[in-house]
Amino acid sequence: MAITAGELAKHVGGYCEGDASVELDGIAGIREAEPGDLSFIAHPKYVVDVKSTQASALIAPEGLEIDFPVIIRSSQPRLALVKAIEVLTPREIPPDSMKCGIHPLAFIGKDVSLGKGVHVGPFAVVEDNSEVGSNTLIYPGAYVGTRCKIGSDCMIYPNVTIREEILIGSRVVIHAGTVIGSDGFGYTKEEGIHFKIPQRGTVVIEDDVEIGSNVTVDRATFGRTWIRKGSKIDNLVQIAHNVVIGENCIIVAQNGIAGSSELGNNVTLAGQAAVTGHIKVGDNVVVTGRSAVTKNVPSNVIVSGAPARLQREDNRIMGNIQRLPELAKRLLELEHKVAEMSKLLEEAQAATKENLE
Image (cartoon, rainbow, N blue to C red; front, top):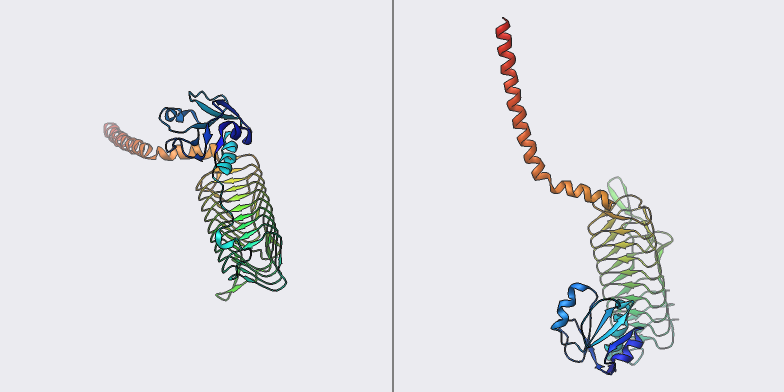
């Protein structure tokens, strides 16, 4: 669809500088944009690209000096971009194979409750006594186990597995290949044999959570593994049994969170970070990439390293590590000098002794 720059500015909560009648029908990066496209700039280092872009309009933050014919200004430019994408490139939902509602090749068990506007794709399964809220989409090949409850306006993408007795809130998005409610990894060793500890708990996922592809969220041994509202989880993340993830957390790809650990609200785990079991991470903590959290972390700090420590301390340590080749060379030179001085001292002592005799 086409929309004028002025209309789009109102929709995204901004205002238009320049010709508000310019029509926009697409969106692209500043270097790839063509006439008719909206593009985006948020940092002064990209201003140089404005001279060569073919875009018809730009979204830019207030106060950023740009010479361009049509600019949509916003105090929250990234949020404005999100709203613009939704207008200019709407996703077709549901796909054609699901426009019939419940596809003839889907399996729906006994005593299943499906809300208004639910779509279940071919070869998807919803087992007995489960409940699916209104306008939720269950894509082809997805599996929902017995006695599950899924809220409204959710999107369950292909080949997602949601095992038995899982509770999922509304507006939750789960991407392809993710497994919710697999058994927690619990064993006890007796006489050299590993005996499995039965995993009888559940997983609770609150409203507005998004979970990426190929994520595993283990069910609790007892009680619940709990992902609280608004948290966003990237691809390839392992969340072990009885973990609690607070509200509005960001968990980046290839993270591992061991059993019974608890993250506070607004925690960020950068890529390939790890959290050991049975510890607590406070609110508003940032764990930098490839860090290993091995003990409790207070609120409102940035930690890094393995083991993770306050970032300023880790920076000092890493700075000294970078100097190790230089320090090793200096140490070797000092050892040679000490050896030479020791030899001279021994010779002087021997000469003195000889003179005295």
